[in-house]
Length: 596
Image (cartoon, rainbow, N blue to C red; front, side, top):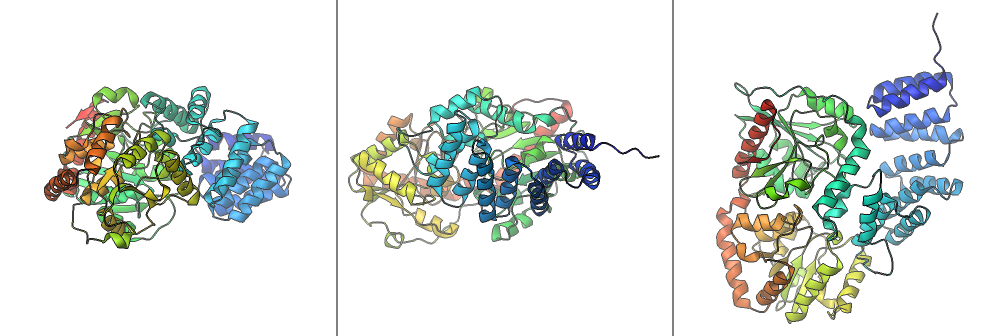
């Protein structure tokens, strides 16, 4: 005689299974529940949550719609909005968020998600108003402060009379018990030092994946190497036309296949561009991993890797839930996120170098340092790019062109003070910038320049361009100016590759020392100033001295053909040595700094 499990118990079991990462078992229990009680709105909502976590968006939408039809509350309408937004049904998503707010205008998460949708669809000012509505309801809410401040930075909205401000985010980080705001923005705030970044990352990691901390690793113990190849996997959403692929694919392709087996694990939105095809050719195997984190982690664990390298970290479309399940005995964080993840379960090592991540900075990381002997950044080989004329790029022939092609969120008032001071002291100069997301940022930056005594027309924005065309026009600049505290990354090596000297000074974080590492590896110590004031003086001197600029560019031109910075084969050799050292440490039960 069978015993019917009460609906309340089935729901509790399903919820507990889901929290433990057992999504398939949770769905099985919900199927039993919904057969017994087809009008169980909470059951349909939980089924939608689980399908959403498994990236099964259409099924999630269907479940949420069943739930709201049965009278589910405002929170389920928010869930429906999120699912519709993920499948780019923006009108349906907005309608769901606004329905939730009509049901409960005090629901902070509804305002947050509506703000995110409005931002995604280009309605920046409306988005900022939505974030501020969330903050009015819950002042100091970390997610609301962070989303609003990040949007303000993308808009170059530095008005001190309106908020939130960087100090508000730091206060929210200090007081929050939980965090659902990824700490990327902190890398770009002068107010956030390495210890603030580590603390925020640790809280974010604990909130998002802390429930997995007591679960056993999915990977088998490390296995000895004699008689077989080292098995290395790379995990990323960016095996496509993206900076990570521009930098890393040639080095990955250069691994010694007699001694190293390479697998690329791709996730994220489907794509079919030329860089995806290059990624497929770069590895022994190219695997499109499952949407569900646990299934994906089990798939990776079945390959019995020696080292898994995550190339996302806390960047867009990351899947840190996969690494949290420990599908490999050694996990390293590299290239995508220039900071600590805050929890050693997510990565054993962060790959850096003695300049970008000196051992004196080890306390700023939850990971052990793995130091490459030259620069942490890989690059494709240097090759000539056809020249472009200045008139084609919309630049005056006789101007001194300073450039920075960084995203607008890296800019801030103190940096703008420095750049405007340079323009003021170099007659006939202009500042050439990357195209921001919309005209709001253009207008704000030009207004900020005028407030500092610089004619707005001296701030010139380049249009969007394909990569090869962008590189060709980049060579037209005279001097590249680095951002701080979050340095140029790909934008730095792109400038150097095209023969444009980059000026920087060393900061106190990994993100603030990237460009110093690149210039040190290239052999251009004269481009590294002692501090921000010295950088301004160096830029002014070069801007006013055409001969000095010419000598510097000539020096860079002589270095480029044989530059170690642009040698992907040599980088592959160094990486393999680093991975073998990581593996040896794992076999010996050690977890310590690695220096090659």
